[in-house]
Structures are given as structure tokens and as C-alpha cells.
Image (cartoon, rainbow, N blue to C red; front, side, top):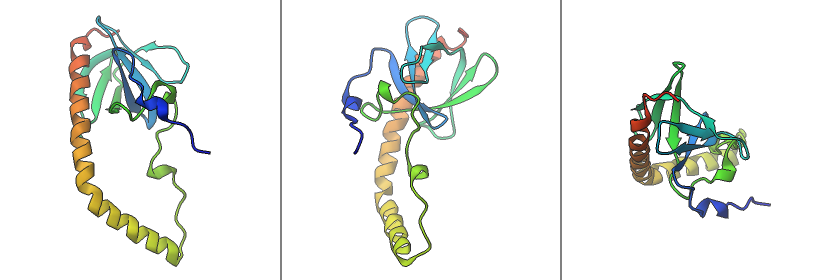
Length: 151
């Protein structure tokens, strides 16, 4: 039975952005004031995240947060409708979750069809990543004034 993901269409609470950290769903809460908080589990507490600086990673839709202890965290924001608060802590799915293909003719045909699909669909992925980069830029602008507060 497929999991009902209709809750993802719900609006996020004010100041909350859903992000991907270490291939897991997480929520960042940016409020007026120096603190940035994150939630890494579904019903877990909001923990303070001592952000010192915010930068852009090599990919424009990914942000790099430098923390007070010197660690860096790479964050990829989700667009509205892609994730919801109940997803916090779950692993982000993708190609890595699929079963490996076998060494048979059917798998070879499936692989050729998949490659053709990716070649034809790549312009759509480019457009999606441009939109994702805009969301990352907006989140960076919201986080930047808080950088340097350190928690």
C-alpha cells in the first residue's frame, strides 16, 4: 500500500523551510532574532543551530552553513509541496533506494529506456534546478542576517 503524501501540499508554518541534510529530511526554523533552529526527527524537539556564516556550494541550489564549532553542513532546500514536517528524519528517496538491476536482457532494455528518458528529460531537470536555486537564494537571504550571532 502506498503512503499517503497529501500532507505535503499543506503550507509550512511561518519561518520554517524544509531541507535535506545528509540525505534526510529536516526542518529549519528562522525567526526574528539571532537563532536558527532545526528539527531532525518527526516529533523531536527544535534544537538551536549556531550558524556563523552562510555560503553557496558549488551547486547553486545547495547552501553551506558554517557552524560555531567549525563544522559545515550542506543544506538543500525543498520547494513547497516536495516535503512536509511529518517527513523529518526520514531518508530522502531516489535512485539509491531502487533494487539493483540483474544481468539479463530485460534489465538491459530497461537500462536503455532509462538512459533515453534521462536524455530527453534533462531540460526539465535543468529548469527544476533553476527553480531550486531560487529557493536556496531566498533561504540564504533569510539566514544571512542571523549569521554571526552563533546561537
